[in-house]
Length: 118
Image (tube, rainbow, N blue to C red; front, top):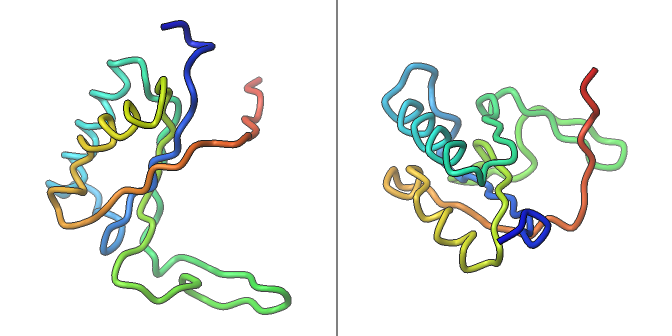
């Protein structure tokens, strides 16, 4: 399948919080990212700092912490190329957070912007 036939999907990782640096959980996520990169399907991947570092804006209000007080928060996300949703789901099922008690959300990307590199 040609790259132009691929759609992009965001895989949002929901966990109790971001994995601590050097932890076994984070190492498992790093291995998963390396596998995705080796497959050629990984477009971008980002881990987020712990939820305690979040700041939320809503209209004219600024609050510390996440907008929603929930058991699970978005701990990170990555973007993959996949020919269709079924393929994206197969890829996302390999995410270690599913074995660690978390969840993933897969959403088609409608559009976006990537800053050009110098």
